[in-house]
Image (tube, helix red, strand yellow):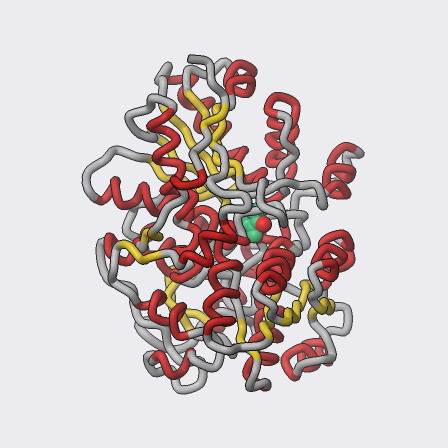
Length: 454
Ligand SMILES: *Cc1c(COP(=O)(O)O)cnc(C)c1O
């Protein structure tokens, strides 16, 4: 009756991914080529991605088979546990029931290997030898380093410079799995050189690092590029999170989830938990689905729904999404993985259609929430994840006001064991809240490409 942990058998690891494309209220606008501004065909993406991922990107199928070799790796830590946060509920004196899906059990410590493993596998199958990528806080780079090692591929990581300097342990972890890691902007690519020429002290951003990694993959025949978030196939691979969570909530005796919460950088961990619930919501279920982002990079709450480049150097495809402008460089908040100017096109469409809503919080109040979580549930979450914790606590406090016993489930996307410097700064009162960057956003939104009704 008082269970706190809901655990599925290994053989209950989902055999199919869920694809929200099948349930969108209207079709996505097509991605456009960054040079020609024409709709992209599969052949345009082939220098960057394996054909299987490109197919998934455009697939209308609701369910897609997970290859056996991918499931065999996911089995190392999946199904991940679902917890009931009983101590946190008690502290908050809320009638709500708070559940969280714990993705920190993977070897790199977050949800990201759910897609890294699938992408490495499809690249290996296609005969690719090397994968280039970008990383913010280092979570994605370490996930891809881990996955490529298991499938015997080389891994080249462009790491956002301010994170490279703040977080050496993630770099070391990537190197332990055999990856090569450089700070971005770097002198290794034309994209990096151009930015350093303008600003030699540039702290970097995910947008810039993406340009470098794409540049690298385009220049080498044996190399593909891999993105850890934003794209449809990434959101598909993350759906194991929500598919498992649904079964686990059933085990816990809950009829349904009432409130689903996740933090959003590019949208993948949020999509992983929330999209399987979008399926229920578009079929009539009453569910409040809440995406939480940082006030320093408030894409969904303050951005514009428009076509924009995926990266700063305009090399990645142009997609319709909520954006702050491709040359927006956010302040160096500790949640490095949430410093992206855009968002998943699927998530963006669902926000624009009112199926999903968004909230933004400052970093100090998110650390307050993470601290409260650590003191009750024990887990020390990543700075990114602290936004989801904050969102869940806010929802639980609203239930306290209204006296409603609602079921809240949030995605606890990863641990913060390599982010202790951020906790240290918080403890010493050295964390700062950056003002909402209204003027910067206004400026960068002037540079959207002149296409598709922009
Ligand atoms: C990367 C990361 C995020 C943000 O990325 P999404 O693609 O939006 O999920 C959130 N939490 C953790 C722990 C991360 O590593």
